[in-house]
Length: 380
Ligand SMILES: *Cc1c(COP(=O)(O)O)cnc(C)c1O
Image 1 (cartoon, rainbow, N blue to C red):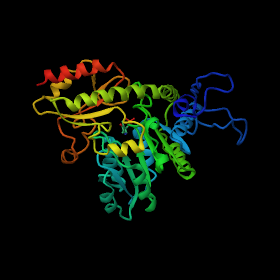
Image 2 (image 1 turned 90 degrees about the vertical axis):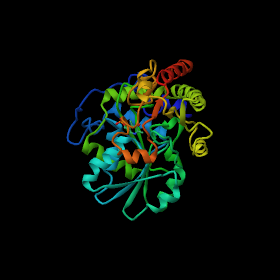
Image 3 (image 1 turned 135 degrees about the horizontal axis):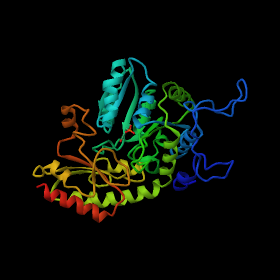
């Protein structure tokens, strides 16, 4: 089945018993058992719930994985994956990952002596020098948030395999519609399903997909033991969102292409970061490993523009955290999504104060351009 069909019919398609085309919401905490050790496959909803299972099977099908797991947020999913490691282990981390990923490692897991090192994973040679004996995994985002740095998933996975390390990919920005890291050799794929998969800014959820039984067993054990599961209603809502991913993403990308070209030419803009632009570093790798460029654009405004005024003057585009919804969202990485990253690191990697991140929605693209133009003009 092609991905557009799989988005709608993958996983557990509807309800066999009644013929309902929509998977029922099994709003239950527990299940009647018939006798000692006799049940119908379910005992307690932290351990297993049919609605959540339908979603878990769906994301696994979409990523071509062995199995999937659904969590209460992207961070809960990331946390569960990080608990695969032990005190003294070290993880190599792409150097402009999602701020919350950095924060949980720096402020929570560091207390348990799980170490990490920020590395420019787009540079394989420098990455090789960071692989010491305690390194157990390479954790990447590609494109990274917010600077759209591209990492070669296949090359990283090959290197990781040769050193017996796990490759973990946060695939939130691309979704399996555009990029499937497990097919390129990764072991674990993560999603903040809050973003494109949900797609409507109405839920918070996280997903994990793994490529083998051992990782699947270990993560199911962690999921049941630590309990950060996704509830039945949000599981259902997420299945509903996923069904329209291909049409939404097509429009998101059409708009993003148009807007990135507008920004690239604008005299009010210093620099544009969008993998779809031919001048974007890593554009060729992106073309090789994904079927599109997504719809997140970061750009640096000229310093003649007051960025706060620019944000305040936006009318159609919502100023706020998050991305991937049908509505366009703009944020200020330095003080919002990436505030947890120390100032010096931010400057070093390029998350400067005049940087804005735009998650391009599916509104009319001319309306979006009009809003950007007038907000920038009024902020001069
Ligand atoms: C939002 C986001 C997360 C965190 O997910 P939540 O659902 O907000 O917990 C992780 N990674 C990326 C790339 C994100 O954009």
